[in-house]
Length: 359
Image 1 (cartoon, helix red, strand yellow):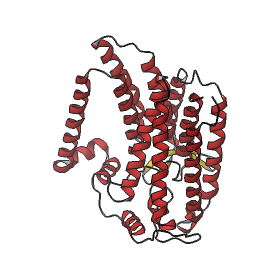
Image 2 (cartoon, one colour):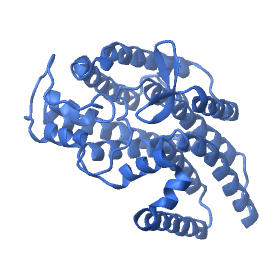
Image 3 (cartoon, helix red, strand yellow):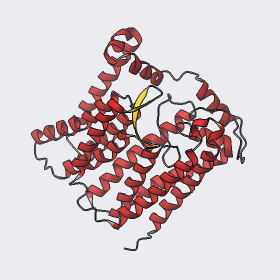
Image 4 (cartoon, rainbow, N blue to C red):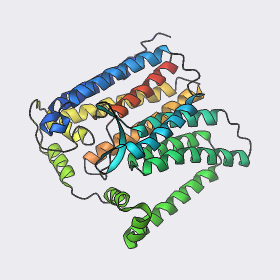
């Protein structure tokens, strides 16, 4: 097949426009705070590295990438352990390792290797009986639970949800007996109900169990509230015009504008039309990936796209919903737009693998 398939060109056009939107906003970021002084150049470096990674991955033979995924999974666990001891702490969370003047986020690296490893496991498992189903479920849950516990200690709630999404997509793809899915639903319902009962009627138990820091992060997730950041984000969206072009000035101060609140920040800089454009580009990107799954009979490749789509849909819906005040604030970046090196690079690696298998 030719390298430049129509759907691949469409994916690149979407990413390129999203990257340009990102860089235009990063150019304004130093006006928010001096801590964002170099984010434009850093983001440009990450995007450039991303395209280089895609090119390299496309040229490599990745037929054994799933087979070796377990070693990447083990490496990611070691990085998660390391970050707990020598990690960089920001906003009460110890999620980053500092290397020279850059920070890497091991929880993002784990996301990629967990996808690959779980897919490799189920592709090498033959399910013929209830015992086989029980064995594979326990194995998948334990492998997902280990990094989830380590990330919970940081804490990084968004990463844990991503791991659970990957697990859920893989288990659904297995097409197990329907009673397994009913049982999962009941267990999750009981867990959430118990948590809410303790949260509202006996929070001391949760504080003693989770610790004060983690409890108050959970408290922020449950309560939407009217925090300073979300109020300014909503004003940024509500008070803007259809078309704007703010360069070297910002409409309203939002502390986490280049990262978690990029959507609202972008609308404040370039108008509601920019927000609409972002939504259209993300939709085109997602549907193009879905189209790719219909054009392949390779189960590993198809499932890999499904796990990535699950992560994408969650991050897009949650981040935009959070910016609109519809969901609680959580550290969820907007794909190919928000500032963040590791998250950006991991997304390019996902895409590089997808394009390689579509050859």
